[in-house]
Image (cartoon, rainbow, N blue to C red; front, side, top):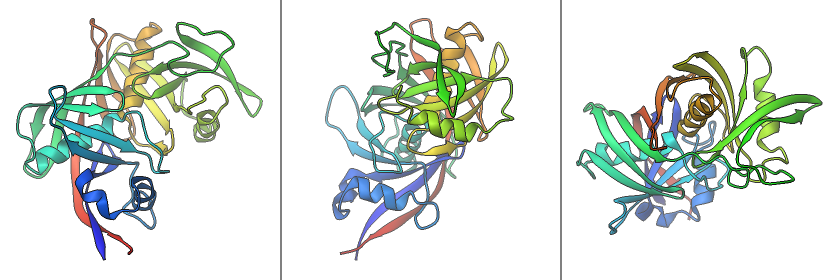
Length: 286
């Protein structure tokens, strides 16, 4: 029986299976492998997989593709790519202090801040610039607009105001006073709302003060997650863009705290953890 070698990492509980593309030849398809291995009850269990490939190019050192648990291709994942980069350091495949990672949404630059022999890593990552236009998010509207702020969408007859940004993935934020409502049901409905032709990450944001926010996350194609780099970034950017916070924000999630800085040059910089969990081999039926 053939097998696929993999390692499991997590960023604040947002877990990813990391594999090398060269090891995927035994699998019938990446999508089918993702659907099987991501299953919580019958698989290894994860919020997605990260597939790594070494590049011989000037622009980037490795290419990383993120696949959702349903087999669909993700535009980007902050925690997923951080787990992938941690895999490279953990397996001594990269040792320089910085690494350039090519993704579907462009090249991201990672800088190793701290690490331990046991497999705890902290990275600072430049992940690109936010995009606010409705056609880029994308957000379905009668006329294209330069941004999408406080747009009312209906869920089961109840109105919810969403503000949106694309940070490699579409993120729609709802600013709330607390989380004492069925936000999971609302998130599940809004993810596939007709306003989002490519679906969206739905984030419920509670502003604590000018430098802190707290989130609950319903992630596109993954459901409820304890953390998300793109959702943390999107929430921080929109909190600042709407005047609720400063441009440097500590983002609190169930899994932990991510620091997001929206620099004056428009670049988004996030700092967060990636931790090794275990390695294994996934059997592939002949």
